[in-house]
Length: 192
Image (cartoon, rainbow, N blue to C red; front, side):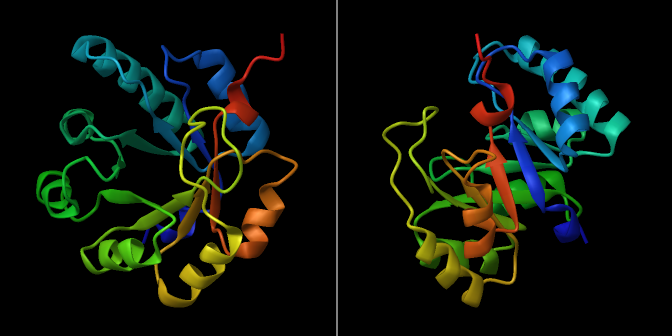
């Protein structure tokens, strides 16, 4: 159902209060299909307010809105879904809490087996990376592009490439088999 929308650019907000003008400009300019809210603050009121503001932008531009890690926040505002890392809640927990319509994405790093397991547990997409050196997570595990090609043969869910992807190398990720490419710095890093 949603799988058709998990294509193109998957934008991830910087880990700070979002610049709504900058984010809206990026959504329009790059026809962003998916926006993930990622702000590692412990202030739940700030997160709620920011998520609601971003969700309004996403509704306005018909962009899917995903919350990073926080199933409770995703449920509270009725986000389109949640993205889970290896130390987050299980897919089953997220599905139970968010329902069958929610999009549940998982980080698979460079592990096709983990992605297959996630698919079997009901994940809607799997993210692999870092495909390229990343400024956001400089110590992240490298995922060679041939892992994406291998994953494409065994997965029926969309693959999102992440890590150091920009407008110069995104085609390499797509050619390897990524359905969507996650970008953060390429979209939101100020050039000054």
